[in-house]
Length: 449
Image 1: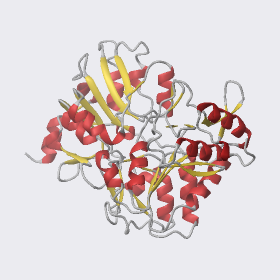
Image 2: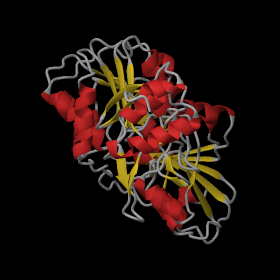
Image 3: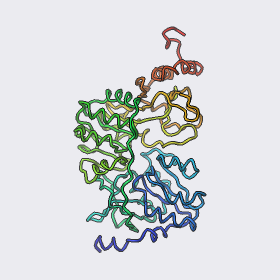
Image 4: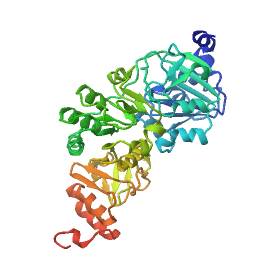
């Protein structure tokens, strides 16, 4: 049988494919742009007849119609590995629950621990050899499909074809049902304009980035600011080894700063596991042999990250306490994003020869409920706040007031360094809190107090 004949034999309407889902099933929707559209709509239409269907997804960039169709949660229970802004709103309504993870272990969770009754993922059109490309999200996509009892792909002809790397595609022989989707324009992740504080922090970090560095950049205004400053700088021969491929890398490419020729992993190729950003970013990915899509248990393995000399990891966080515990995912009990790969890259970059892991945050924020200005460097994490990076792994902490290196430092050295990069208005209260905690030395104060 030819691949085209097998394709026709497995082709179904979205309604026919959705009818294969049973009450009580665990369904996987995949990651970001891999999450289905037509099949999600068809499942939503079955909300009145299904019960106890559990859906896993990650970083939803579009409304999830099945979840919206069942505000009671009787038919569908939605669970996310990493919250987008939309998923935060769902969580506030009780319609989304977080799945704690270390990102590099995501494929292992599926292999060892999880049930997948049905995998439903958007993919790029089948190529002439019968392969469906996972496009902008490799991550754990192949492992999810290998674990699933039933594999349904929703073909979207707007999805770019991301070259490998490895595990970036699924053969038609491994697919049970094919649905041809609606092919709306791909959801974009609007760039976050950097703040003045972001620009100050970015300038400090860029000073620490040498020629030939391999880069990992997180999400938000700060990586955009760093990418822009690097593009304007005299740095040369930069490389990519990152979990998220974002528009900051595209700007570096356009400026001629990316060669990938000095890195150890994926020599001459920029290595990544998922992408989110602009239409231009997706077009850059399409059939680009300079980029390599790889699964997250490779991209985020600390040993692989550490193989790159001069590995520079830059991520944002929300709160740091005087012991060096870092939260990047919650504010008290309010869950905001997720662990993602931050811990992976903090560990991996620290292990690399000449490597540095920067965790960046503005020194203050304004509380929305009261308008009060508060410090993001605190004596103790706010009750309920999740620790993303234990104090044992914290490396460089950066605010607009400077950079402090916590690696190998004692508790009093950490307190001293962190207070030095806190906003000046909060330093005296922080010193008093450190004194009460027994982590402040009299010699830290020049006046001896």
